[in-house]
Length: 420
Ligand SMILES: CC(=O)N[C@H]1[C@@H](OP(=O)(O)OP(=O)(O)OC[C@H]2O[C@@H](n3ccc(=O)[nH]c3=O)[C@H](O)[C@@H]2O)O[C@H](CO)[C@@H](O)[C@@H]1O
Ligand SMILES: C=C(OP(=O)(O)O)C(=O)O
Image (tube, rainbow, N blue to C red; front, side):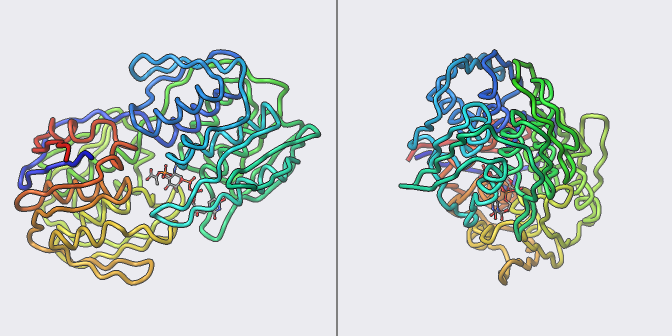
């Protein structure tokens, strides 16, 4: 298994180019199943998650050609059965369910299991497809979806007690584009990745209004055609590098970003005492002169993203004063806390809230990555810590960060991958 060795105590400086968004790429790749024609998707990051999605598309019958970040996908003839062994490797494989239902009126997808960050049910995905007229049955660990009659548009609300659902909105939108009549999704997820998917679907001939807001209106069409699309920059990767710049930087610029997508991250860094400036497609963070503690609560977009919570937790460990972090999206997204404590962090966990008092210096230790963003938090803490940190279960990072260690090294971090 691969581990990352980080030599702490270095300062980061320079420019880093941000990759295409993981959370846009996954549903956009799945959406290519909606047409027999060829689709061309640019700036797909090279991640284990995107590679699993491409394998799933191949297993479903699509021809996939890859040249660097550009994917040529032609799903001329496809089958509705999704292979269990691939689906269980990645929760987001659930987003083939919407396109299969839209195009074939039939889908068999394994029920994704729980996950270390929480229970993560898919009841709203299933309800949404039922509202459109599909019959849903869960049997032997598989979701079976079938619609004998053509699907019919309707109005539905897709919110849970935790708020909107990103992949649930994606799935219903992808089924509804080929559904007769008008579908209105109230309580839709407004994340930029949902809007990016809608923009791709519109290029394919879909009629969608309101994506990027909490009310999406879809007018069903008979069929979609091939299209070419470039995935938006990964706002979470960009935010992670900005937090790295806050923790241990002497001027870090993220390039090829959409600053508006980073609004809450930028504002929180600014209110904590960092000088953060933007141009049309870059954001730069300078060394903080007198950084201070902060308070954040995770919320659906445009609120503060849960996918940035762990990285800010690492930051809070290193700046003077008291910070608090309240996680409202996932029940169990504080797995990084115990590992940060092994590095000398002062954190008190009380239900959904972590109270963190900054310490003068973290110290390197062997630590365990538990999920994608928790791993990123450990890497950032390790760069700042005194001594060496060994981070186990590196595969979590490779799910969602394209060449994270190489990019950090180009800014001055000292890292090495080892196999043990
Ligand atoms: C591949 C991808 O895009 N992943 C992102 C997506 O995950 P994902 O789309 O899986 O997350 P959701 O937006 O669906 O989850 C938000 C909340 O709704 C709950 N819920 C969701 C669906 C459902 O049917 N029932 C239900 O109760 C979830 O348990 C969670 O508490 O959005 C999350 C929230 O921004 C991000 O952390 C993930 O990085
Ligand atoms: C939780 C995440 O991803 P996923 O939904 O794919 O698990 C994430 O990107 O932080």
